Image 1 (cartoon, rainbow, N blue to C red):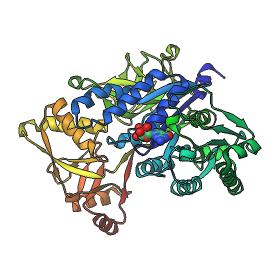
Image 2 (image 1 turned 60 degrees about the horizontal axis):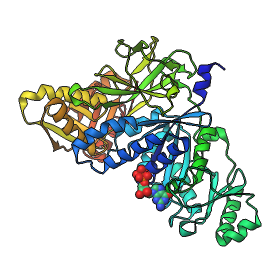
Image 3 (image 1 turned 120 degrees about the horizontal axis):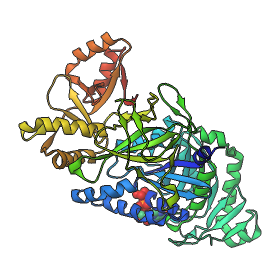
Image 4 (image 1 turned 135 degrees about the vertical axis):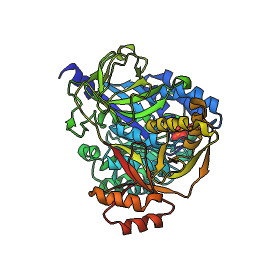
Length: 527
Ligand code: GDP
């Protein structure tokens, strides 16, 4: 194995998906603590704290730096380099969150044991499922009175549409939480509360069929053993290939805040989760271990200094190795760039800083040369596919206070649209531009940024539109005719893809029936 292949094979790139308050921040911190990257743990907290002040825009500006720093966290654990990508999942939930999932090789789903699978998790899961991303499941907060584990398992399996294979199983819950049985290694890890332990001082009792355990933990032990017996009859053992294909998910129980059951998850990430895999470009499939660099921009974020309009393009390295000062070509524009200052998202281990290989994420500061979905290579004309744009779920019309600044408005919206901060639609029949968002906060952020970065005071008005579907057709003439007939319900997005806009599902339904040749898409894939 060459050094490069070795480096790539030890990468594990994943994201945590969860509903707000399930324990993502807490778990992230514990993972960082375990791997020794404690410094970064502070910034995870800081970012979280910033979420409570979302109405304070100055705060948001200040926090942008932190959010760039904590959007990718790298840590070393055992022989692996783990890249953990943050999925903004709170009030600032937006399309970015979805797109981050296209840059990972696995996902860790955190479920609050009292609530089961919640809405936001479900939306993210759908993206993982559509890409067959392997998913590990961590059921958190077992130190509280929660749902029965068998019921939870059943519920998660149903919503996930994949089978769960318990790697650990809880003994008791709430005040009577005794620990978890490690099914694979036939031993029990005994629960001890405590937030900041990273040592391995947990008591571990070998042999689950032990009289001492039965005596010590009585009814909880008996119940857990009985449940495990039932499960072992009903569920097949973990099959790594099934897991990699996104059909089976290994299941863990624990309590993140008590740092309990977390190490098992980290071990599984290293042992089970896959190294970087092949990536699909229009032209061909690209293998991670190819010596030449290639990568794709999956997220663009405005940087600290709004006056300079600099942005950071987050690039997932798809193949080869990136080194500073390297000459890269943007396939879309044909432009060459030679990034000198690159943001690397590294742990405090100095020796890693200069190297980024397939599976890693790099941040390239730029002023608009890099757009969402762009492919970067050492020269080969490749276009990676699969970056999703989702049909927005709410719309506003933009009105400008000073008509003399409409050029700035258009320019600002074009750039914010390219960045993916918001979706911008230009109605076919003319009139105000329409903004489409997934999360409400996106509208507020855009208004604020229009003002501070482009000097445009805009106002948002309600529109009758509630949904949009991108439209395509095998026959161009049919599509053109549809667009003309539906001129008042068609709008063009930032890359000039046409979309049908409707106020209700019934309106959409009717259009679909009337124009059977037209295809309506809730998602547009870049490339
Ligand atoms: P996030 O919104 O998903 O990032 O969730 P946080 O990590 O901020 O956790 C939300 C709340 O749940 C916080 O008050 C945590 O202290 C608490 N929490 C996290 N893990 C546990 C746990 O294992 N047990 C209990 N009882 N509370 C927890």
